[in-house]
Image (cartoon, helix red, strand yellow):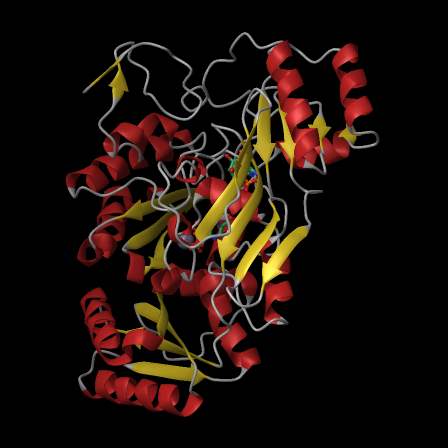
Length: 467
Ligand code: FAD
Ligand code: MLT
Ligand code: ZN
């Protein structure tokens, strides 16, 4: 059964009957899945930390089918859990009880691409990496990139307002998503699938659905503004003696690389240890307490390399950076990026992972890792920090050999109280899902008078008041 601390009660939804199954089979013949092996995978989250007990997985192909399914479920009071690539990290992508799983896996058609404006329209189930490959041929790229690109869906990305590795350069999905098509819970189709960069005709309804994590409807199609593929890409992997030096390097980098800077990411020595131990990835530079991945993307290779080298020279002479390596060709760029992107995977081999995704003023982000290490002492197996420095986003991860309720009680609410003290956010980019829903009030000051927090899945209709 779900963890009592995290899970809401099962509300009085109906249970799926043979008549319901007959209806679904008529609407989507051959795509109403009850195979226990397939359901096992769809009921379990990527981290293998929460699981649901759904006995039905539906795979519609069109908006019309989604509309008919949701309209029917609404009339029958059947609960539905929308699912994209099931790579979510907060336990929101799987059912809690026996909700019907509605998957976008077969909604994977590209609808249109305008090669003059760079505007792409596609169904919500397109895998992010497939979209990137499609665009690459056309000299464009997706404005977002994540370690989960091989599995996550663009609809899931929008539903979680995913950040990732390119946010520093291209901004959040709140800016790049131009339009959405959404099916509401009662089956009505909301067509906000605009393909215009500018549209000030009233409220921007699509914004409500960006980051709504499936609570307001199912996103069925997306239009998104894509940048041109940069002609020159360089990646530098650098080492620093302290987090303060890392921040100085960030300042210097912003000043000297300016418009060509496309990513500034970090990982600590503990992350490197896990990469070495569990994935056999070698450190390409001297052992250091902190590592930085800097990416530049521009249109003139000579100009970009010159700028990057001037920056590196300055960073080395001023001793902000103690060692580093640079890549300009694709294979080495990929290898350097994997040291940052594969930390998540390395952690899964270290043990059960407690994951925190925190926004803070950038100068504070590593202090939380240091304080947590001191607070936990030897009760945790590993306490690691990595993340998106350019966005003030820390990923604090703590592992233990197995799931450990005592360790969890030492981490929470300590981590949330710490974050609230510095006006941070307890979810920078992963969302609330099941795991963070009860802690929203550390970042948002709204609570219902009934005492339960007004968040994801809270159907309580009691009036709101400040805490
Ligand atoms: P799912 O996991 O299937 O679902 C996530 C949530 O969205 C659920 O609440 C679900 O109900 C809802 N949902 C899914 N599809 C729809 C839809 N069509 N309509 C309405 N609701 C829907 N996240 C980041 O922000 N930045 C990162 O850098 C990043 N890196 C990652 C790296 C790895 C290795 C992994 C495993 C995950 C990473 N994530 C990252 C988290 C995750 O990949 C993102 O949250 C992603 O956007 C989820 O997409 P998905 O298709 O897998 O959605
Ligand atoms: C990342 O930045 O690597 C992702 O958000 C995944 C994670 O937090 O592990
Ligand atoms: Zn991240």
